[in-house]
Image (cartoon, rainbow, N blue to C red; front, side):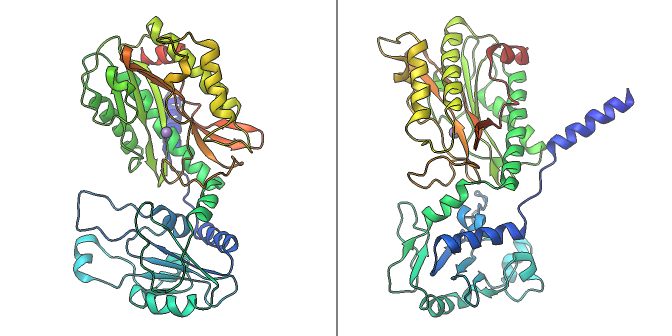
Length: 415
Ligand SMILES: [Mn+2]
């Protein structure tokens, strides 16, 4: 008996142990891959700027910069140069600031002992010198690339020449996850699944949506995950039809559906899972009807996942819509798929809506969501079912399969 308890405690610990982070070598490999994708180019990336003056916002590293360096501190600049040049890459770090370090602890700076080993860069210099170095070294390259800010202006680079956008090339790399990344995503998913199960146990009429959020947050933080990967959507009744509802202030009632679209960020990787459950633990006939339609559509879309298909249009979306219209009755005189009003899914990785290069079909190593939904404002309820799927040669593997989605299983786990 005692042994059994010890064993189950060990198993619980094992389930929560975060897998290893990418090594310095993996980051170096990613930079080498980018250099190959954009040959004969100087590539410049800026880390997030230093916002330590604003204690309301956590520093989240610019994800492309993080993907290529693993560097978490703000204010740094990355310069990549063509294969074979001397040097091939430089990491520029802000100079030491003693006053700032009194508040935040020690930061790394150029010249620190071991900074090369710590960063994985053979050459680490001060940001004070970056403009001059960049001008000198970029002059030898036929192209200059940087990240084009979405919607914003280009970060001014000290060169009078055309600057090309590196975003697409980096996105293509980020879309194919390494085994290390898949393991980290799986961990974020496993913790998130437990958070959903805890919410199911807790849900009942009279509770507020934020109490469900609190229960889920506790599971994530107990497991060592840093934060929600996105603002949690916990919408009951009329709120369940609002796709990105995030106020989570409403009191839930018996007979309502609760849509919980909630995912943990663990070791910088995001999970994104949605379940729709009846607040009182029992689906009524109408909820059951719509839920089965969405679930069937989700299974049809997952079955259509394979390399070569497009995510935003084509076979996956069509499979889901066709299932709805073939198996469902018209709603207010319209085909059921009219009530499926958003995309079928997106890539997930460091970001919940992860980097995506335009018009690139699915490939093995992609991790995507499949998340059909139907939202009927006239009836004050919506259903969305969202799982995370790994694309392999043979088709999709549902990484979030540990979290039930069949009605009978949900009702059983809510008891
Ligand atoms: Mn999603």
